[in-house]
Length: 103
Image 1 (cartoon, rainbow, N blue to C red):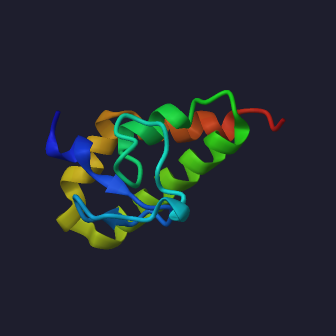
Image 2 (spheres, helix red, strand yellow):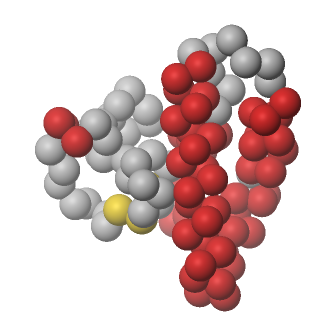
C-alpha cells in the first residue's frame, strides 16, 4: 500500500492529517477499510462512487471532484496525488457518474 493510498479526505475534500482524532458526530467515520479512522481514501471514494445507493454515489463523486479541485489549486505540489488519481481511472469514474440516469 502506497502512502498516497493512505491519504484521507474530509467532507470538503480537504486532506486530513494522519492520525488526527475526529468526533464520530462529524460524519467522517464509516464502514470502509479503516472504520476507526475519519475521512475517505481515494480508493474508498472510487468504490463508493459505484454504489447501488444514489446518496453514496453522490457523496463519493462530489468528494472526488472537490479533491481534484484542491489538487488543481496546489499545482506541482500535488502532482503525485493527481498522477495517482489518474492511474485509478478517476476521470472514467466521474464520467460514468455523469452519464448514469437519474433515479
